[in-house]
Length: 168
Image (tube, one colour):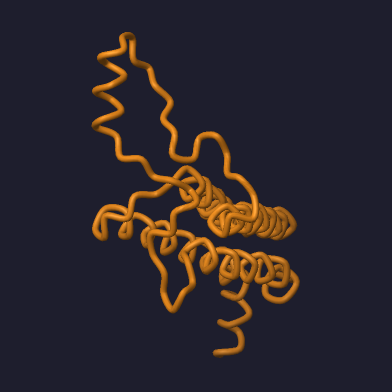
């Protein structure tokens, strides 16, 4: 009986896990931002996009489980999303370690101000968050460094999962 249930629910495991991990990661980012008051730089915000994408693709994969080939393809697309997230995180680590220069938007502000006074007021109210400044570490490991390994592990998981649990 348990073996039958396991075989029946195994295809749902990868999309559910991807969704829960993505939602948990975004939840942690919001916790760090709004509760711990760690303001994200532009690269931090870019690192969230693959988790949003993978979460949406995982929901779509769950909805399309009756079409196994499509559901597996969606999980493979989650792998591509996490691979992009790994690349963004590696870039961010390089900016933090001063291996290369960050984008022009790091620490900058795009303005819609009409006058110099409006621009000055906007600049004074806006906190400047630099991409090369390390805001938080745990045992000397920064958030982008953690994200490099986390996203790489999720990429591998998404490449293995369809052939392991979603085959029929």
